[in-house]
Length: 636
Image 1 (cartoon, rainbow, N blue to C red):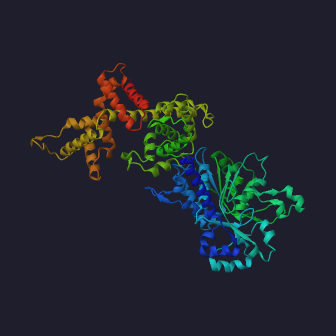
Image 2 (image 1 turned 60 degrees about the vertical axis):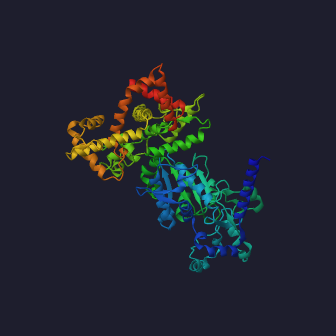
């Protein structure tokens, strides 16, 4: 046996031993000993359990004070850019875990297709499964109960007040009809009943139920509440016998855990009535039986069109609407979060390992987010996009994020979904002979896919025309970035050159502002501030002569409030410095990058530039493509 195979077999055997070690079975009395040791953990109801499971993975607050829950940021179901909606959902769950009114409501995630609604629920489901394998998440049930009822529900009603006084655990409801039949008249149930540890598992239908509404004409409510078992009906004679009924609906499976209700508002009234009874009263009714008690966190999801059609527009829907806690799940408006989504999804699909050039995903994300932004009276779309992602520090103090968001409360509920971008780019990546994906090819793919993809093909011609125009905006942003990349690669020690230029500008600006002369540290000669040097930078960003004094004063004022003294801390001056350095190399880049027969010196310099770009994440193919692209752009 190969060493690797042997190691894997050992790991597999270790895994099985670990799983076996988690199992537990005992009498009710033995279980009661466990309850005595951990009354809170073993006395939790569903909302407490789900809330504790999510928070057990950890949380933190960002610089804006928005809570982040690590469960939603890790693993294959990681979610990006919707921290505020998730914080709202967790506020509801926190209140529910404290037995407040939200415990009796359905949580409805509402938003556009591809926004991450189902991913949120998948993340919670997988988190519950892992949590139930921990000591803190251990959960126990009556052995043989079809809906895995809490053993404490076997305690008679008359003894529950004293049990509460002793343990602080309030016991709700009754056991299912199956357990009532088998233990309700058994005076020795205390010794006969067996308790076992269970593990939340969607595949095994333990603690997680999942129902998707479809055609109301063909879908039966038995999918939720179970049905008569025709094979056992002949054995037990009547449909009211608990063993002749299969308590295997999604309500039963979700007991003590989570019920996902997909496309919730496509369901007919009967389904929603059952759902209302489950959440408000904690039970549902099936023919020939008393109440079947089941407690679970119900999270549904729907798109905005169904939400408005079913809950908002009809006047008679007001009562139904009050039963929901609606959480908007928009598309992200943060470029970095959108890129993270692409990296995750494309990484899962890129089996050929095609190289993706730096800035390719960012350029695609810029276009996608521009399609989601609403016009602002305060800033242009590109500035707004950068502010949402924490960029454009020169705009801080002039406009706040709160002001921008208040302008457009529904921002992010429309536009191009991440799935469209990922599908379009994946198609290009899969092309025969494709080695590398660059931003220009990506933008072309996004434009060409509009009439083919199901996410966009139904858009009106006017809508398509509008989002195609935004491709030009995204391309302009890429062109600016491409020039900076090539510029920095052409100039050795770019940062040092830029910082030196900044230091000289500051030195002469201080002298100008304080009406002083500059003393040469070596010769001791005194000279006037170099107006030509200062204007050579200021003209790069269109500062007129009349505004030069005020610009220099602002730079010096801002400099005095900072701990560092780096040229990159001043966006406009940084732009001026980079443009100035680039202009010095402009003619050489134009010639060296586009000439068909470069001389040896030009070839050597281009090779050095390409090598520097490779060090920054480009492959040789896309590095040379970027150099040619910038050269052609400068020759236009």
